[in-house]
Image (cartoon, rainbow, N blue to C red):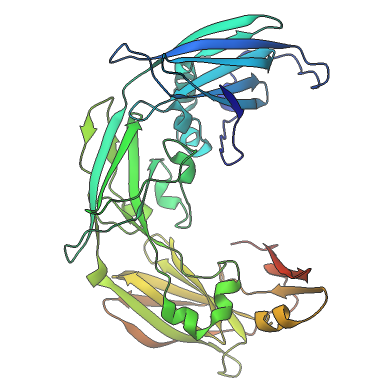
Length: 420
């Protein structure tokens, strides 16, 4: 059985990681390409039985990285076959729940966390086969039993945290400097699937985890219906300034630099990935951005909340008319910084009710290095906070949002010439 690999599968194998592989001759065009076939069998190393209904991925190796990709599945005897595939060298990766998934190891975040030597060792573990024109190549693939990573997620009142996404990523030496906005979906064991969720008891179970040191966290939605009711337009800006989800790591840490590292060995089970969500120690911050020149609120502003010790970003929110709110903020020392915008946000109600095509370009504010800063210690809810900012520089082009309306739809595209 054979099918084209779905576009949602993202494999970011670095070209440098393939330096140890022989370079291929330039591929011919599809009209003149010469093709061969490949068949084989997948076995489970621990049972010595066929790996039934396992996924099988082919990756064409070239000097530029990985070329064309194909996906198939083994039958009830563990057999698979691919016909009419281009001539060349292929990596063959088999995936079966509970067994080490080398597919997850080929993601760019995972490879970036490895040394050059580790990458070469990893690639050496992946079966490789040469397909030649008008020939049928044969290969046997063996799957090794992977580790099991278990845990329970609960709120600090003792109730189970149900239906939360559980995400794991390989620990990197630079983990303390990573942005809090980073997402690690590429590191999931089977990139065809969404991350697993906690069950009705708050339990989760990750299977087939390769050996290594990992960070494990759940993503807790923090959107507030109260905020949406106050300004429905904010929810229509493509999520640019809405409070991000709250990441809670194994051990209860709320940021990546403080996360507990879970060490996973070859095979066996690790049940140390428990997570407690500290709702009783999460608070709300409300305040106002004011212009230094007039002591009046700007038409728009952006407010960032940074952890004081590492300057990791905890939150970033859009503040219409200078009013801002942060929900579910942990007890810690922070730095608050803000920037004012010269333009009010577009009125989506008017855009949607207008007839004919419309194009609107909106330049919105973005706080960053050089913005006014205010130290803040959070031990309870904080109300009536104010931060003074200079008037916006109308000559300085910041991030922009382009809104095109036509044919009954609104398309939004955002970009920044001055990212922070």
